[in-house]
Image (cartoon, rainbow, N blue to C red; front, side):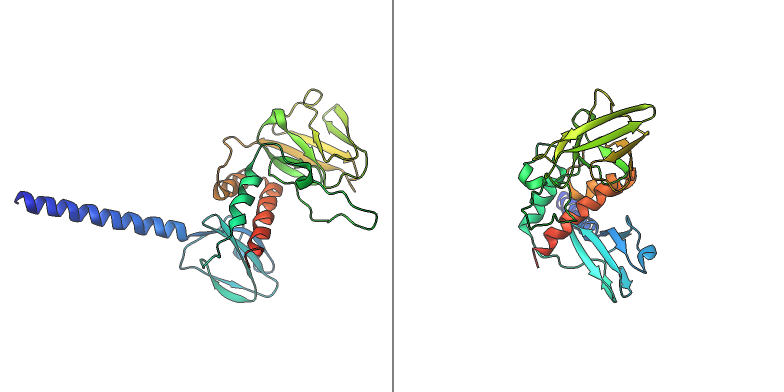
Length: 254
């Protein structure tokens, strides 16, 4: 084989490899993941299900499935049959929302709390402004980003409240004062331990809440990595918080 022929063949193989790589990348990018599923068909499409671009979802009345695709969410409501992938409208606020939710830095109080006037009621669905604040209304497994900076959060700032924390034979009561909705976890009295139960009561809770900490490890840098990590560790309340924030951002694009 002559040199020109060999060169041409190599170029051809290189081009074919490049085309294949683009095709594979495009296929991967087109995949979707179920990040929330409610309704009669929820068992068919459980959270974490990965769908190929050719898959179809058949939803009944009352079904709602939230898909994540290319770092954005897409909400499907039944009844109907839907493709697993679809055109997602560009939304400039989505990137800012994800960045805020993954941030471990300080959060302005005005973004994270609610102080009502005499005739206003606090919104019942108000959520903590990032994933790493411990909303003590929510029990279950909680992924800790940094145990030395773990911070408690509440949705309102109207009054002084006392939160009682118990772990084994130890207990500590912390005060959250009016005008604040943040309070650092009492690490000196009750250091953060993984795999043990903490019982939280008081501070407006209707009933005691049990929280168990797990180490997040390497912090996620994208929505997809966050979903994967939170699901793998069973941190459902934080996963729901992220999905809610992204879904709200999705609505603003409509």
